[in-house]
Length: 73
Image (cartoon, rainbow, N blue to C red; front, side, top):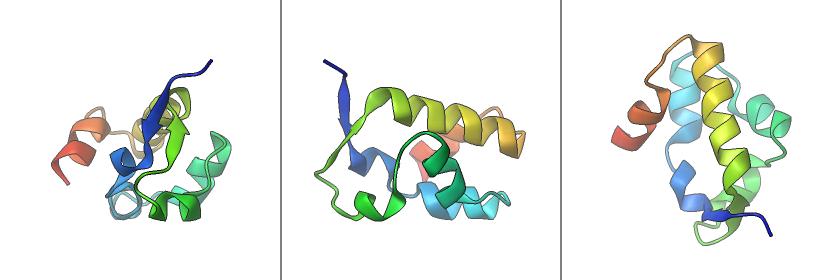
């Protein structure tokens, strides 16, 4: 059974990604997430997809502290 996380963990993801010149919708799709479903803060997402989204976003934006920036947003 996969580990799950509340989608609330991605609050602030889309604005942060856009501020760094990224397409949050495209990156989310690449890891199997649909940003429109994240409006329900109590929904669950695979923890693996969350981790992969952060990794891909950090790599695409060329910022090593993407996760920290998300936590601070």
